[in-house]
Length: 253
Image (cartoon, rainbow, N blue to C red; front, side, top):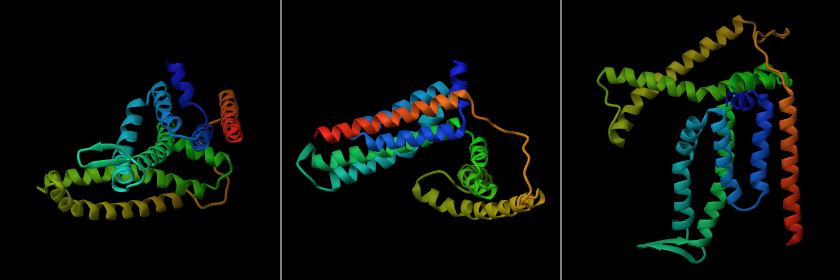
């Protein structure tokens, strides 16, 4: 099991990113919603093999659950289109809207599942390093890294500030009005803390000659292996098969 975990996790970051792009393209090439929804389960299987299933399911369900619910609510119930597919009490579920929501949500699930899996099996450090190895300027990769790390860092900082506010007697839990009232005491310190950390980071980077044009050296590096070559070949063949199948389907009809 550990070898299989290493096989998935130790693929070169750009190889895994190419896999994400191929999965997303295939979801739009293959018509209908069944294949696109199946991508969620394929990604879940890969996450299981990689030992990342719990985190993958938690993030995917939390990020997509409410969004998909409202998508179906708006498309299938609130926008009358086509014949009535189901009638639940006084609520009518329309056929055209239901299938439109099903199709659109399936593409969203495929897109989101692929990217969530990518960042579960790839560290930000390795991804940024692979981009620099491709020739991307360090300033550009730093912007990408800062963007990817911003939300987790702010979430962690917000938790610390919220705990500090609790110790001071500020109510942070309860109904929506209580939480809204507690949001301001958390937001202001969070913004000020983010600004202070940005200034500290800028000073640290300059002290390490980040803006210098001199060639940088690294203590840590990653390299492609034969497994990456095999994986890319499989992905290219799979994409060609998807395109070929789609062309044959269109030509047949």
